[in-house]
Length: 178
Picture 1 (cartoon, rainbow, N blue to C red):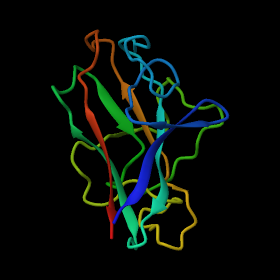
Picture 2 (picture 1 turned 90 degrees about the vertical axis):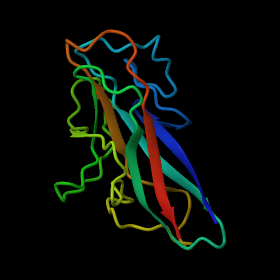
Picture 3 (picture 1 turned 90 degrees about the horizontal axis):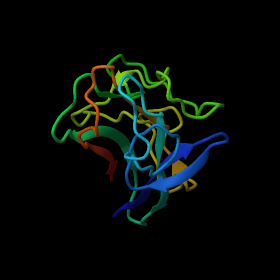
């Protein structure tokens, strides 16, 4: 029993979707970018990453796919001074608002959407909705493909963040299948 799910990044204007297997952040709005070539200057931010899961198939014995969660499951060697990853995924303030892809595409300026700290522990409940609803479910009669709402991420630094590559981190995208 399993669902076929891929991670998609949207870039540019109009949005172009690319299936991705990693999420390097940098100074350009591009999927699968080379962070060594597209470095972020201390005190600046990465371009926002607008990602979402795309569900393309369900096996015949699968009844429900739901409870999508995105979080940092491993922060590696840790954070550098004043480095952090912000996101739009907040359930702590009991408000969930699905982000709409911006008319001008992702920005490198301070994000007005990615304002919360990206969770470093698995959330107890879903933090990414479907159609603006955290409790939405994909069921066998759902027309596929289906996309989750966007998760918007941005690496932010300060002027005193040490130069050089940041420590790699592991972003986990997880869901429940019943």
